Amino acid sequence: MENPEAAPRTSQPAATKRFEDLYRDSVARALRTAYLLCGDHVEAEDMVAQAFTRVFAKWKDGSIENFFPYLRAAIVNQRMGGLRRLAIERSHARATLVESGAGTFEGGLVDREFLRVALRSLTARQRATIVLRYHEGLSEKETAAILGVRVGTVKAHASRGLARMRVELLKEGE
Image (cartoon, rainbow, N blue to C red; front, side, top):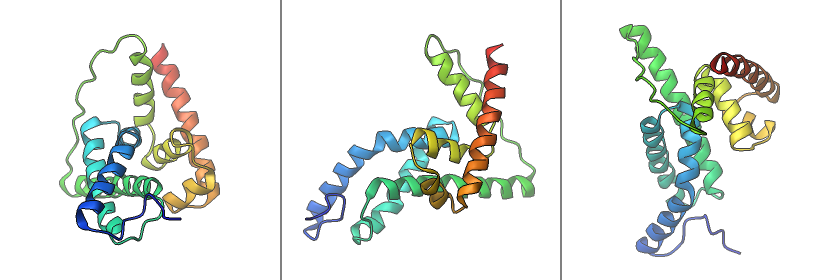
């Protein structure tokens, strides 16, 4: 039985159409994951676009069996690599990033804003762990594989990250 996510062994237009279908089926979930990792809509869109571009090259060669897990790993790697580059740039240029002011939110959006603030208070590894474990619903083992760490490290990041988020959410609720 042929994997519907695998690159077709047919003409270029058929391959392009199949990738467009995979894109349509995956982009909203990919954007949510990227947003939760970085906390910024524009950056999330950039991360997803770059991830799709990188994944396409591997996909058309037929080396990807499960499309979304591969895409998700590419998004996480994109974020982690971007954070490493940012840390290097900061140390050399001593530049500071100026955060844009948050708008006002009403109703149920207030909770989302509190969650966004709490997620932004985490380290990059804690945030990636929380997003993969609780938003994506991955197991500790799957999360460890994506992040390239041991399961115990995932447990520690999740525990410390959730504790820090509780503190932030309590501060925001006051």
